Each structure stands twice: as structure tokens, then as C-alpha cells.
Length: 189
Image (cartoon, rainbow, N blue to C red; front, top):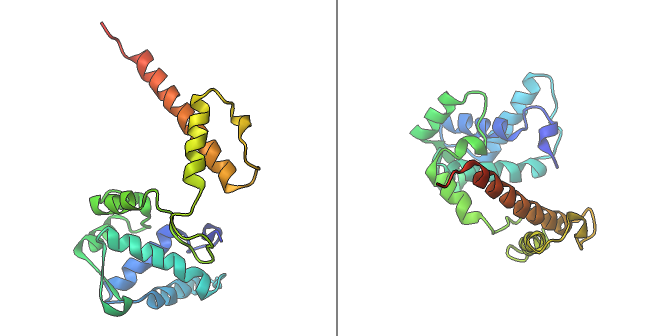
């Protein structure tokens, strides 16, 4: 489900809502969900998705805000805004997303710790660690280094493995392009 198709349900809007609700006192995801519905109703819109569809997204965003130390978690899933969160809210009144959170070293550490560990999502049949895509990415990377063309991708189109292999191949090509550009710009005397 791509929430960006719906007004006021972009990541930046939802993070902003989480912070604003938490600024009024300890709040739950249900409090944030109610606020989202109220915001949408105030502009004449109806909530286009079910609570069950939106709650995982809100939960992930709450986790990111906690990792960036903008929210503090209390018992029973309640969160409150921190002084850092209040500053972020004042500095970014039109919305906050992961690109804003990357300014905080704690959030960058959180992202680094998760790198290479795919997140389990609702309905995911493979537990974390069983995702074959990192292997396919590496195979594509090596394939470029061995002189294979991007059209030599051995995986069926429209599969995650095809895309991962292609991304690996492209990353290896980009590395060579960057290295060539650097070498052309350097002057060794």
C-alpha cells in the first residue's frame, strides 16, 4: 500500500502528527490515528484505509522518532515528546521524515544497526535473515566486475531478485564511474 497517494498520510505528515499528539502529553498510536482522522475530516476528506492498514506505518514511524530521541517511550506504548522533539517540531513545522532524522547520530546508528537486516512486515512469510536479495545484489556486483552486461541478469523480470541483481550490477558500475571521474580530476605530479 502506497500511502503517498493519500493527502495527509505521507510519512512527513504522520511523523508530524505523532509529535504533535505527544506534545500534549503521553499518547498512544490510537491517539495519533484519531488525530489523523480528525485532520483529514477537517479538509473534507475521508479516511481511505483501515486502521489495521495504517497502524503498522505509524508504529514504524514512532520507532524512528524514538530512535532519534524525539519521542520518549513510557509503559503501555505511550510516548511523550522530548525537548529535542519540541525543537524539531519548531524547526520543521511542515513535516518530518527520515531525511530530517538522519541529522541525529542516534538515528543514523539505528539505521546502521538495521542495515542488512530486512524488517519483517505484516504478511511476510520469510523471517528476517531469510531474504535472498542481499545475495542477489552481491552476485550482480560481481557480475559487472566479471564483464557481464546488465542484460545477463539470470532472474525473471518483475521479481525482487532481478531488481536486487540489477542494483548490485549498477552499484559496481557506479563505483567504476566515480573512480574514473576522481582519477581524471586528480593531478599526480
